[in-house]
Image (cartoon, rainbow, N blue to C red; front, top):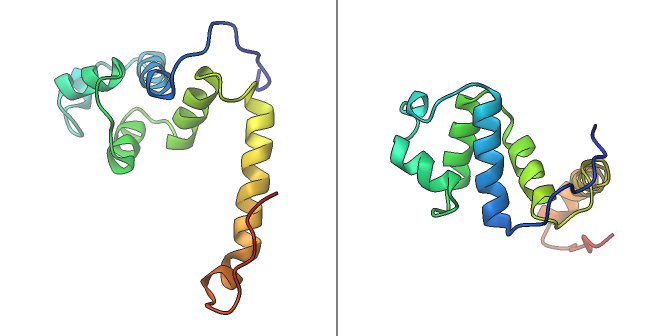
Length: 119
């Protein structure tokens, strides 16, 4: 199922994230009220309606509270936004880019060398 194609029309990235949060929370059977240890119900509702822009830390807290990896939520949001055709190719592209960063990490922190990060 990792290579599923878009089955609905694309949405903005913000709406994609809102949809991702709402879908994940419901799939895990977690109510908005149950997230009160990390955020208020009204804030979670605003996120799920695409009205707020959460910090990465807040997204990570919410993802952890619903037992989801933040990258899973972001990947789903990215695919739902129509910015990438399917999950499989997106994950492959991400893996290649992260590997490039890992391989170049030491030289990137060196003031002498600044290699290109382009594919």
